[in-house]
Length: 248
Image 1 (cartoon, rainbow, N blue to C red):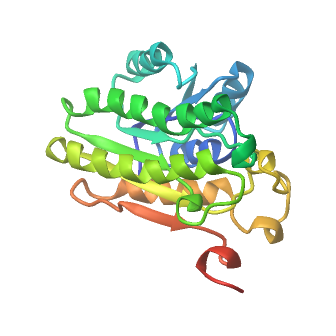
Image 2 (cartoon, rainbow, N blue to C red; image 1 turned 120 degrees about the horizontal axis):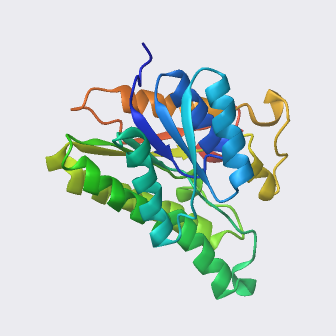
């Protein structure tokens, strides 16, 4: 029996990177996972591999910035598995643009994906969880919420806002046994990091030290705690990273 045996988990943006790593670890721990993303060929491939490895997964294509597609994501999950125990709000995007050059469209795109989508998915999770004994919501933040990069104003702002959203969800869900937590990852070997100018996938541990499955293990720990216990916030980062804790 795995730590998440028979739990049903929706992981947004789980076609690549951190979301994919979380989904794979959850599946190995016995969860039934819903792979979500906008590119059908990618989510289908991830779900197929999990099933081939002995797990249980379905792929649900949905743009979580669009309310009708969020509603459909939850409807299809309930139709397939009958419940939602865990939601991981992982879908995210960043821009690398100086503030004075940033367009409103760039700003709004990051806000829509990083923050508004997390709100809408959490709202739909609440609707089910509050009437069915509770559940867990994990929001994926960033150490940029405390130590931003240059040229990333909307990313830093939304990741700071994710902390506030998580606090509000924790309070609003308390009477319904809905537990909300936030994970703030440091640099991780993923396709997402590659889009921000990092070395990208396929590098050695010396390049990053941390991988998506590491975050999946932390998320599993959060979700496997007793119902009355919440590991509310956690920073996870490469031990050799000098720029967050202090100068090396």
